[in-house]
Image (cartoon, rainbow, N blue to C red; front, side, top):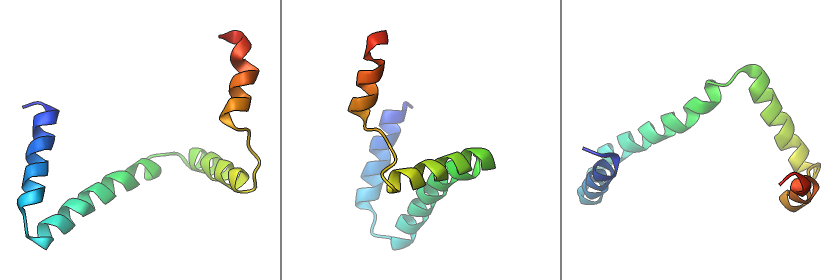
Length: 75
């Protein structure tokens, strides 16, 4: 069975169920999967991301257009 077929079957089952317990379990699976990527990073990688987010909050960043103009000469 390919992944698209599996997705469609899961969508169908999701739409048909009235059991809140199933929906809560399914949501917890997705929540756990989303949380895993952060814990799999090294402390150094996490620190770099936190630093970047803090800089962005202070407005210390270059927008994409500015960066692309700077590096356009290599394209």
